Amino acid sequence: MKCLWKGEHMRKVIAVVCAVAVLAGCKPTGSTGGGAGSSADGLTIAEALEKIPAGEEDRSGYDRDKFEHWVDADGDGCDTREQVLIDEKTAGSVKDCKVTGGKWLSYYDGKEWTKSTDVDIDHLVPLAEAWDSGAKSWDADRRRRYANDLGDDRTLVAVTDNVNQEKSDQDPAEWLPPLKSVQCRYAAEWVAVKLRWGLSADDAERRKLKELAGGCPDERVTVKAAD
Image 1: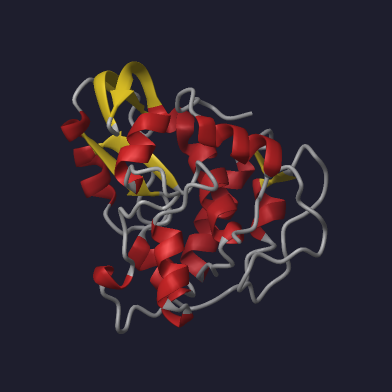
Image 2 (image 1 turned 135 degrees about the horizontal axis):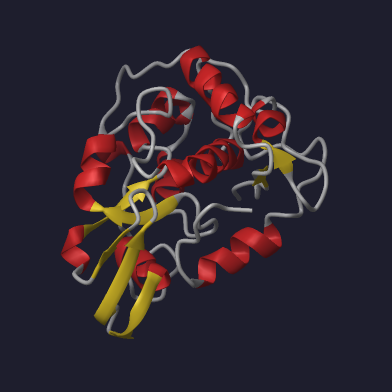
């Protein structure tokens, strides 16, 4: 079970209901390693981590602009940032893609916000980290789909802006949410996103995730491969 729920939003239905269809031997699109798979209850973090291919990070040539983001990914008139704010609000109403009277819970630090300007939409696995871990070889369309992924609620998350800025492009070996009670959840979601998109993990990242996994025996990872 997750340590702390983000909020009641529609993308969680996709993540929970669809993601449990993880079959042994399936590969996320573009993956160079075996896919995650076992039971409807998912894998432990340690088991899921073994499905992630090893790889050295390579940031050469990285440019954030190579990941076109905040597009209208699902064609409903709202850009991706607006859509995540809508999906993750815990209160408020929506008109013309804007939330009025909204509240958002930042699970990284447990803070609640009533102004959308205090909230950033974080790529849980940062764009630079994705580039280092395999997205360098993707075409522009796949990078755009990653940057605007609404198909799994773990890829993008509404969080406190300065916490997101503190995190920057760091992986779990370098940064973890300041709220310790959600670190198991964060590790599981990090692994799930990497598996979803067929991304690799370097040695330091893998060691830290293994360490976290040892303290999170009840956390489960389910994966939905990206289209």
